[in-house]
Image 1 (spheres, helix red, strand yellow):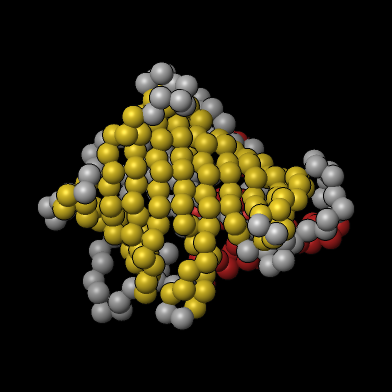
Image 2: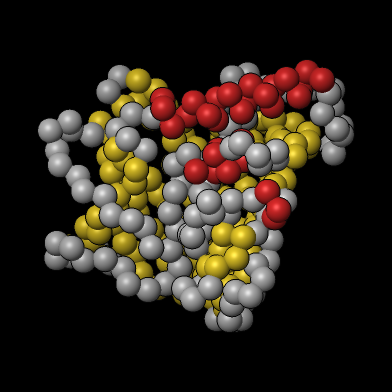
Length: 260
């Protein structure tokens, strides 16, 4: 069942690859085996994530010219993000540097949800059969980064784009970046197709992952993310930073509501 969200859920996992490979070359047998391993890791990802709390700082901007060169900052918000048993809850704490009243929330604008684990399910879920290819190797401060390309066609996609009144299922694809020595996720860049019957355009998303320690255990989780969408000739942008990860207190009480 497709999730009705403004932004595709995003997360990725990489793997080590051979050096002697040309761009856009098909996957070798060894690489197909590694992709199968990625799927196994993806299906186990949610179960491995601990219950935690972190802070999400979001800067929303708009470019009325639609060129991507004339951004105007709209607002900056700070939210407490709680993840319990795979469910996300956001509580607005500050808006433009000022504390807000309990229960306050952002009522309009470009929103996104599900930066934790959702795309793994969308790419590796049953029946999706995402298409993978080898892209290139990169060097990052002396560290090898292996880059995959992937594609999920519309007919097998679970991703939707909506404008508040209508939603449409869209295909999507992009690049997965991984540390060449460990396969740890480093970055993901995705682009959705243009939706049909929706005023909003396709979404471009870039997510960078970091290693965090929660209750003495290490995990790869989002550190920064940026999403852009076209809407009525304008461009809207969300720049997000995730920080202050720590374990969720077992004696806390959290009530989850359906995301609309």
